[in-house]
Image (cartoon, rainbow over all chains, first blue to last red; front, side, top):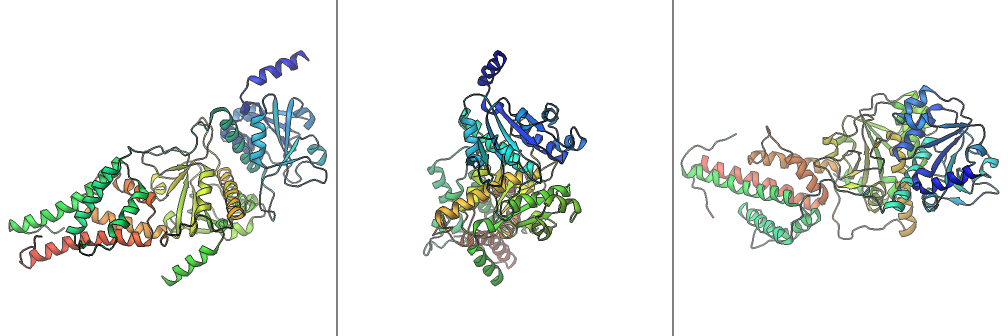
Length: 273
Length: 273
């Protein structure tokens, strides 16, 4: 009792993601166990529990774990689901099949939010057998049933694929919960220095000059050409590096013309490539 | 041309989820191809494209597809990524590695929102090789890089697991989009005719030729110039009208040079404005 209390206290200090247990019940193919270990480690989860796996350990599991050997090596094997979730304060069972007398259904995102909001204690997400899923008796152990939205015509996901989706949502929810978004989303690694509208105007002026020199733009009949080009480059929002390249190309066009004319003036033969 | 226009018109009538193409580049293990087919069908996607798969078809792919035989059977095999995405107006490449000169990064949810918002045209999500992912040249074909948030210490997901997450987010986004807004949301009323990747490639080839003629691009020392320009124009996503203008400018530069040289050959004085 005292030991359990200490364990709970320790557990309360853990981040939500470290309090998540993935439980696989009656897995037939050892490759799937390895694939789940990999999916977990990819998402920063580490606690794997196996209830009556058909074959474990196995070289096939290790191969599919592809480096998540630590998760696989630390996996605990149990005789029953009851033992595997004994310490858990929240148990969520994944199942595509609605039951006549079921527990409340959650989508993966809702389940992840529920887990992240769970202030203390161990939580478990339980996945069933490849061919028959979780039994009614096993789902009865769960507070919620997790249902992954899928095509009703072909709704049975591979167990590791299902675990991947759930671990992904858990990571997002737990990272959101603990640290905003931890900067994970939509970082533009190479966003260059932004430039002001004044510099864009200099570019447009240069562009207009060159297009006129080329005879492509007729100042007497400009036909919205510059407006269309402005719209295009406004969408792209060039950074300093890019605007330098674009200006460089315009200058190259002007020098190209000047060079050809100068050669003529000097009476030297034009160099034809 | 007429055929392409008809195809585009037909395509505009399809629901967003039916306009999504999953492209696997250089997949080594046939089991992964099967697992991706299953992940797709679970989420209601059907269009699978394979660029230089090592082994296909294969009994291992069929076994892992677990009933998604129709998706596998309809999969098209290509020699190059360019061919596989030729018709696509939006191409998103999945990669864990940020690149020095990269395209804008999207999280899976953002990428799915982008796809759902794409009012018309085919879109492609591209997944790379098991061991090396997508090359820089392949990512250069993409408008966006998709990055699945994962533990930085163990960030490489199995390709089918990655596809499962992305297909899941695509299903949620497309179902949300069609349920919430009757499926015709976010079409920019003023947007011109969209163009496929093949036409963008023609533009880049033309641009490269002209920059080389100008001496601005040194083929012996190209210094990422084309990659930077691709990135800029990928962001802008020109419509047909705009790409015609851009091509017209390139042709005008070429004719400008030709005219100046021809005048010299004919011995007439160059006309200086």
